[in-house]
Amino acid sequence: MRLPDKIFRAASFRSLIAASIAIGLPACTAGQLADGASQTVAVDTAEMQNGPRADYPVTVGPAYMVGEVEYVPADTLNYDHVGHVAIEDGAIGYTGSHHVLPLPSYVEVTSLETGRTVLVRVERRGPMASHHLLALSPAAMAQLGAEADAAVRVRRVNPPEDHRFMLRAGDAAPLRIDTPASLLTVLQRRLPQDGTASLRPQTGIAAVSAADTPIETIELAASTAAPPSASMDSAIEANPADPVDSAGAQPVTPASTTASAAEGRFMVQAAAFSTLERAERSAEALGGIVIESGRYFRVRTGPFVTRGEAEASLANVRSAGYSDARILISG
Image 1 (cartoon, rainbow, N blue to C red):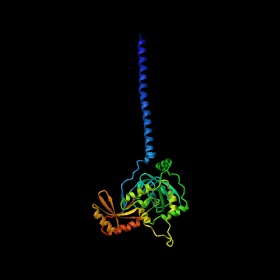
Image 2: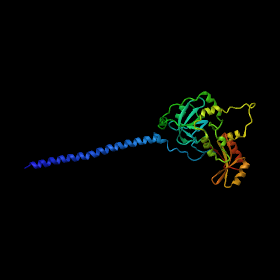
Image 3: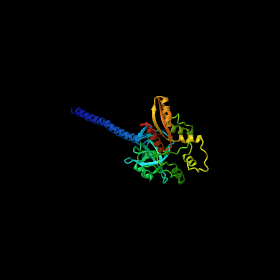
Image 4: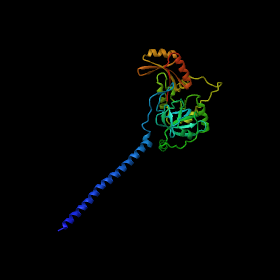
C-alpha cells in the first residue's frame, strides 16, 4: 500500500532535478552571451580607436588667428613646404600639430641637416605660440634626431595602412628612405629666413589671377592643375631657385612676373566694404586689389612670398588708418 507513495516521491524528486537543470541552463547561456558581448564591445572600441575608421571623418575647420596672422585650413593633397619645426611638450605618440593641414593627416618630416625622414600623424592645430611650419611630439622629435627650430621639409603622404595603424596605436612607423645630400642642398636654398616656402611646381599657377580669386582658393586651384603623376623632387631639382648671374640674366617677362606673384602665400587684408566704389578707392590708395566675397568687397595687398614682406605691408596699411588689418595665409 506504500508503493504508490514511493513512486510519487521519486517522480517529484526527478521533476525537481529537471527543473533545476532547466533553470541553470538559461543562466549559463546568458552568462556566456554577456561575456561574448563584452568581448565584442572591446573589439569594436579598439577598432574605432586604432582601426581605419579612426582616420575619418577628416576635419578641415575654419580660419583662425595666431597673433596677427590668419591661417586658412585647406585639404591640399600635394602639400610640400620647407620651414622650421617646434617641439610640443606634453604631446604623446608620434604626432604633430600643423596650421592648415586637415586633421588627421599623415606627413613625412625630413631634417634638412641630416636627411633623416620620419612619418608623423598630424592630429592637432598649431603650433599656437609661433608661426613654425610644424610642431612635433617629443617622441617624434627624438625619432627625427632634431632639435627645436631645426630646418625641415613637410610633405603630405598617403602611407600604407599598417604604418597608419602603428601611429594610431602610439607606436613609431618605420623610418623612410633618407633624403640624398644633393636634394638637401636644393631644399636648403629654398628655405626662407622666416616663415615657410612651398616646393610645389609652378605648373598652372600663372593662370590664377589674384585680382579675381580669393586667396583661400589659390592653393587649391594650383593643386588641381598640377599633374598627380609629377615627381615633386624632380621638379625641385629642375628649378633649384639658385641665384642668377646678373651678367647673363635675361629680362624678366610679364608672364614670369605673374607666376612669381601668384606663388606667394601671404596677403594683407586692409578692410571690407559694402560698395565696390569705396573698395576701389581704398585699393588704389594702398596699391592693393579688390576681391568680391559674398556681399562684401575686400581690399588686400599682395600676394607676398615671405611673411616678412607681408608684415612690412601690414605696417604700411595700418599706418594708413586701417587698424584692423591682418595677414592672411593660404594652405
